[in-house]
Amino acid sequence: MDERVFNVLGSRVGWELPAWVLGIERSALVSVLAYEPFALGDDEGRALHDAFELTGDVALDSHRDLIAQAVARDDNGDVRAVAARERFTGLAHECPDTDDELVRALFELARDLYPGLLARWPGLYVEVHREALATAAESAPAFSNAVSLLAYELRFIPSDDRPTDDAGRRANVETLDGVGEQLDAWRLPLRVLETSTKRVIARGGTLTPGELYEQVAHDIDELRDLAAGRRRNIPVVVVIRGVGLAEDQRADLNTYGILRPPHAREKATVPNDMTAGRSTVMLQRTRQVGLVVVQPPGSGMKFNPEHWNEHPDVQAAELAAFACVVAPEREVPCSATVLYPITLYPLGLRNGFPSALQRGTGWRSNVLTDEEIVAIERFASRLRQHHHESVAISVRRLLSSLARDDAEDGLIDAVMVWENLVGAENETTFRVTAALALLLETDPARRAVALRTFRAVYNCRSKVVHGAQLPANTSLAKMRRIATETAVAALRRLYSDFPELLSDQRRGTRLLLGDLPALPAAAAAPEPSAAEEI
Image (cartoon, rainbow, N blue to C red; front, side):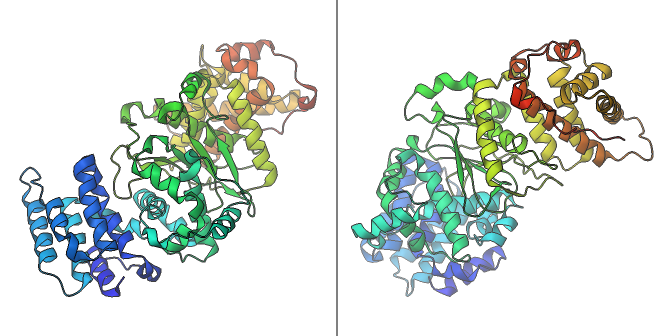
């Protein structure tokens, strides 16, 4: 791509394009610019896209009529759209001296037809390497578009760039985590995202579409097939951000078999259905700060803002994040929260619901060790067996507590976990705090300390809720930390040692009465206290 074209594009958005972008094929650029028209409707959108794509792959002379026809739609009399099409059609028929003019016209057309393009443009070519990913993560739209572009570049590489040598294909297969056999079609998008991110980091942030294409050459035919007509087979992909992996280790947790909520299991019997539970959770080795739900185009799924938390795939994503928080026994929990739901359309959120950006403060994660990865997998197995909808609010409020920027909000969310676990019948201070102390401590002296600590935290939460003035020496950040750590410890204890209580809404009463099942021999020793003397 001529540097002058990118200078024009960069000047229009006031953003300096990274140098490596200059190596991107023009066909990839026009495909990205043109893909938004799919929102217009399958036939019209595909015609417009095909016309745009032809400008990148074939001599323009034989396709100007098709281009003119594709852009000549009367978009309900939209003056701006009509004017943009007239400019583009005029340029196409006037045989511009350089392709630069046509590409500039394509950009102007896309910009005028789809005003949101201009605001989102920087996200398309954010530098995708270790440092830049951390920067992009500060902006949900930038990150979503950066990830989407990586996935879509694979689908629009000119066919003559595709390696056809069988030995080369076998070599490429071996580079993908040592997998010597072809991946199942429904896992391809996950592999695309994982491989592209890994390769970008390995190459120091420089990656052309052709190089990216090489890494999945053995899968490209199936991927094109999925993109062209069988999109319902593409799974929702959930990327856990905020959880890194040690060295080159990776752990894929398939929510189809591990993290699917029990009450949604009956849907998992429907093959090749987006609602059938074919979601995948990927823990990937990059510096990240949240959790992203990626929804494929054409899936037919609708995320209604009012029912977002009720969607089974969103619930599965929350359970995945929950496993990452609770399973590793850390002094400071991992932070893995729902950051942003996106679609695989690079320039739009057509079928998705764009939630607000959430970033945890003070809960940034460290890299997971091999032992912690094993612990997460084991805990995920417990979730599959024992998770009950009566503790769903605990899961959601714990994740929310970790994501809150405000200490007051984080404290309130964490104490709500306490109440949900052991105070369902009558949320008094004594009932909640005493039940938690009995759950977490077996030594009488430590139990007394825990009770005083929990009572102080609970009273602090009550003052915050009712607007009462706190004592001058009260640290909300400390109260929030104790509340959250206690919530994590209580949930871990229930899932690990007393799973029978999860489905019993009289949990608090049974704890107070000592009506508990016998502890397994391996778990007889009490865990370190989550409380501390205040």
